Image 1 (tube, rainbow, N blue to C red):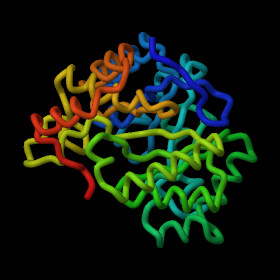
Image 2: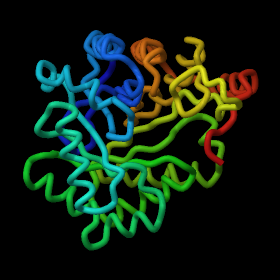
Image 3: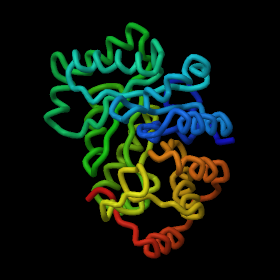
Length: 285
């Protein structure tokens, strides 16, 4: 089984590994069922999905009637207007066969112009607040990628009391001085406010170097169990963080195994040796 901890101030104790349902975006229902059974086997109790993840919400749908109470269910919206966000939320309900979710997140909010629209009159934040007031969602969050995202999350938290943030965290990413400084400032603020911090891209080896992609991830991933163990332990050794599993069902059992036996953080020397041996590169510059 995998350790649980409070998911910010939501009152829910989530497993420190959250299932990244983007892994279900391009699989059959049988493959999705096998992945979801693995979640039950390891006691995973938190699922993160989004309408933009292919068929992920559709694949979750058949499981929800019987297993909705087993999971803290999160989805997202890429829409920046109130009307668009409401439409996308209702589509998510229909696809997942549910009438509410536990967590609704503003997806990939990094562009300053989109940020202004989302927080302005008629913006998506209005739909998020309305949905929470109506009991259709319980908690609200904000997500993103790129080097600028930690700084943008600080800006978002200054404007609105989100319950969670989501952003990249891995060994190579933290070698970018600006990102590392912004990340640490964000972590400090989230700790002070009991905001949950979800991390992604833990298994990045490098950006894809050719068109022969061998995994459904947005990057070339680590694939050997020993390397995955090291990367997962590095993330989970930092108190308070959550790790969202990679977007490929073939990697899911390896991530779950790694998390179930994660121990102390690998040393700096071990991480440096592995990054050199594996020719690891940062995904974002």
